Image (cartoon, rainbow, N blue to C red; front, top):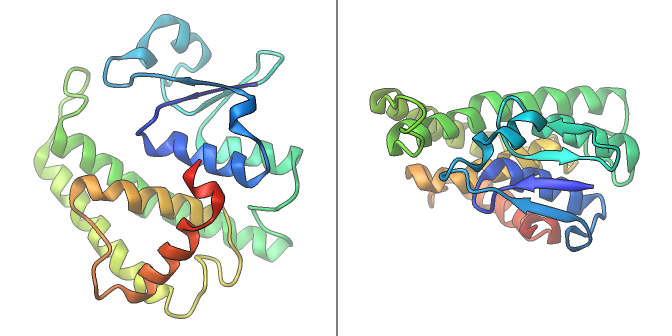
Length: 205
């Protein structure tokens, strides 16, 4: 098994956290770090594995390649059921899916769009629109406020259950620092949650 990753990118970190939570020792598998700024992910050999040219990419021993964080999480949920990260019963699975999509679309996606359009990090391959990036940044700020309110009544994103939704929220909020959207002193509920999920051993994967 190989994991194509990138040291500072949030999406590969999410896959590494999922794998660590499932008990996979990342030191015992082949982790290939790509230089995204240098365009390693655009080279023909990688594009053949993932036409979307994104990381993370999980390559299984038989050569099968899986991309996208949710798909990789689903694979490990099915092959290593414990501990469950996608829900423990029908209702909880539905709630994890609901909140994971909310974290993906309303938080993580906006962080990524803000970063790419404000920083121009990929300006050699796309046209950044700083005004759009700033609007996305404001959406992230609003979601941080929303999550603080939500976590006033919930230990984790999905009630009292640590899940894939928490992992997505964690990597998004941590990466949001690069667009100057941070947990502030007034976000006491979010700060409590962040300390809790960050202290899990897998969070440093």
